[in-house]
Amino acid sequence: MDFFKKFVLHRSIFMCRKSKGKPNGKKPAPEEKKLYLEPEYTKSRITDFEFKELVMLPREIDLNEWLASNTTTFFHHINLQYSTISEFCTGESCQTMAVCNTQYYWYDERGKKIKCTAPQYVDFVMSSVQKLVTDEDVFPTKYGKEFPNSFESLVKKICKYLFHVLAHIYSSHFKETLALELHGHLNTLYTHFILFIREFNLVDPKETTIMDDLTEVLCSSSGSSSNGSGNGSSNSAGAQNHVKER
Ligand SMILES: [Zn+2]
Image 1 (cartoon, helix red, strand yellow):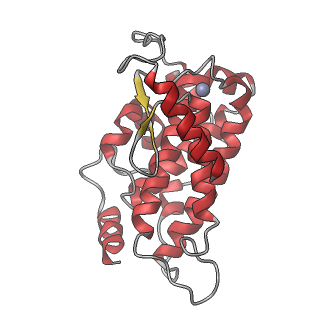
Image 2 (cartoon, rainbow, N blue to C red):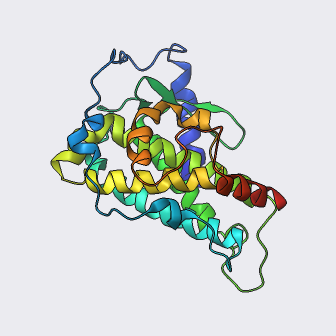
């Protein structure tokens, strides 16, 4: 907490010296070829499992329990996947949290926009998610303890940020992931995650548009019945209604 405050303060001072708007001197790469879209890489997975079925809410399980368990697992896996390339994701190599030509900013607790490097952004994401998933009042693990009313919106927020991290790995560190031969893991994790957030309508489709080209390739070959966002199957529509019940 202290660290967070200090960091925010430091960044605020730092920001005053910088001109607004422009990324830190790094020009956006014009239409760079996306290596991760090459068919020889997109077909690489560690399993052919039907993720569409895997993400669906099992009949006897409480929806919030299901969301909590999956969200926590995705957090751990995405954190682990990022850790494999984190030594290459530095303040030098990734001066902003960029995904393709888009930059993300962190917002502090007061909603103040913070410009930061990619590793700082990822650190903000991971620290704040870690704090939430281990908070007994937000992700209760004890029998009989209720989920808070804000649970669904917090899960949505977590998923949005985890998506940014995954997208950054693809757009800025796919070469390193390839060199480590971990692209099969990344593709599998991404497919599973996207089908999960779609099933429960957890991230605004506008947010994920940036990676639609990849999603199209990976998820259409993974038993997903809908490629777009608006015309979900009856299953996902049911799940969405279910989510809103709380
Ligand atoms: Zn990076």
